[in-house]
Image (tube, rainbow, N blue to C red):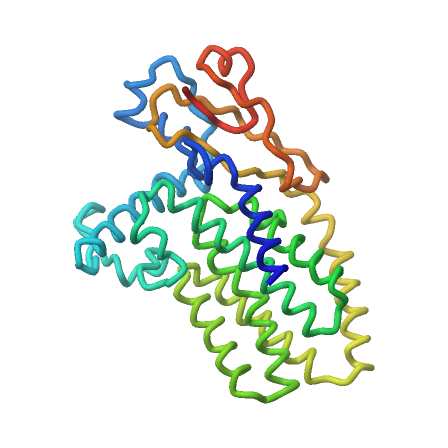
Length: 308
């Protein structure tokens, strides 16, 4: 219970601008490149174009608004009539209409629900990692640290505005935890836990990451099934693989959540993201340079987008 409260509190602090104020976890600034927002904000310089980041506002926001808006009216959105000549909607995995973790979209404003969903899954990612490490015999302190590292890792921070990434990857440590328990105990609860974790990963909406979850669960099962001598050999192999992969991961740019005002797109301003190779993210640092007016943003653009 203490670990659950700890990860929930850390996730809340990390997402504080969106959880407690008038900001949302969406890249609104990129929408200023398109009409009608471009005409409404002629003096605002749009953020540098990033097609992956734009998916947050150009794809996930309208999909969540439409799909869960239909569900609130008692209908399941089988079809999306607003794209091209119409496209399947429920059958589109990233719509994630049947994923229980998207419950905040059922009863909250869509823009606000993005932050609440991210908070829930950051807390779950930390808690599941804590449980996995404890099951493997790690100390309480090491398990707590591992949960913080995974929940607020570069991967999670970089893709917060694309909800299916976090919603799916949060179940990876849960699937691994269940796999280890299954190989050691062969209990029904372990079977049930593994089934729930894999099902949730599939329903969460990102099939590629769900495959990674399944692979990680299989690797954890193999690790638990083999003897201590072979485990040590696997550990050496993993250390060597990490050393070889580190140059690739260390060059990833630092990414932070993108916050904007919930009020709309007017007066939107946002700076380019700064790539800082070899610099890990600092997820628990409060954002700096919060501008309180359009003039302040034009003179000294903030690190995170804001508007009056």
